[in-house]
Length: 462
Ligand code: 4AD
Ligand code: MG
Image 1 (cartoon, protein in one colour):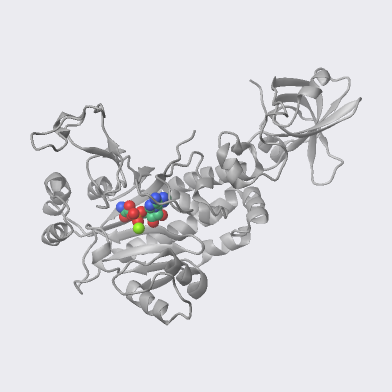
Image 2 (cartoon, rainbow, N blue to C red; image 1 turned 180 degrees about the horizontal axis):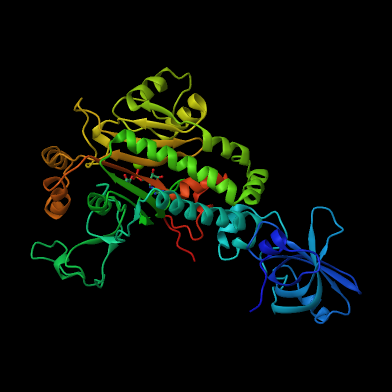
């Protein structure tokens, strides 16, 4: 089908160019002798106005071209008289693909709440807001590859179905072909996973890191970019049961290198998205007052604050604010603590390092103090944790001891231990929650509004 995208028409079209624009009607104005149709087609934040004279073929279809209807307008570009619009289409023909009856079409004009739009996720991409968010999300995804490919990191596809629990938190969805009404049992009454599809209890992955480590220990630098799953019962504005994660892993690297990569990465994505999506970000800032395009540019040039967990706890203990959860060395930072650090103390992203080993994952490298690990979290204003990472424990005996301490069964992770038996090297990596960075840079406050089909407890529409 011959078609010109609105983005291209507005960017490089010239008066008298012959064009064919396909899209959905945003609004219309009509008289007996002519009509205006404003179309959007998802290719750009801008819409295009079409003027349809009464003698144009298809003019009789105008009553059916209501908001939401899909049409094709062929015509010639002309300089627009109205302000704001640079070019408009003077139609030579109008074709109607599909009607959208006003009595039932749920997207009438403006002013729908984000909550309402979540209920019609299949149509919300047609609004200014979600068109912008989906294009920003796309640009950031392309930026991820741009950043790593330029640095010669290999994109590695780690499995979605796995038998390991990387984070050791037991927050996994099972993958089984058992008839749930007739689950095979062993003589002792336990579930007999040997009879299941994989002969083992399998899950959806919570992280590609463990497999990412073996790829890094053969290719040097790798990254994953794919969906991950957590069956945590968190109904918050920052948690999804299915989210996308980017996990770089570097051989011959320590925590400092890891922090540098994380900072460079976030800075790069900020600069990149402003270049790719200036109109989208301007619209989102006008509407939701998250971060202005200028602030995003500033972020792309800024240095992040660095603080150890122990110093962060001291700062929080001295804070005049009363926290709901008390601050105490040895317990994890709550989001109110994280936000106090980013929003009140540093007013910038901050990297917190060297957390107590007790509440961090088994694979993190033990520091010389014997109490903390070489971990780092990047906290962003408004959002909290966007990145979690660490230097990995490359010493076999230390890793084995930590696995015993944290009750991680080593039987099925011998391959992971092999990486420490054969040619072990210092290595480090992190995971960036993709939806969290989309949230941060787009200004959307609810994570359900930055992924087309959000998955959360009791919610699996679409
Ligand atoms: O801190 P996490 O749990 O770290 C890992 O999974 C490591 N294996 C990563 C690594 O070192 N390769 O998760 C990493 C990031 C978090 O910082 C957060 O941004 C995001 O993933 N995240 C979630 N995003 C949305 N919904 C959830 N339920 C999330 N859980 C984690
Ligand atoms: Mg974390």
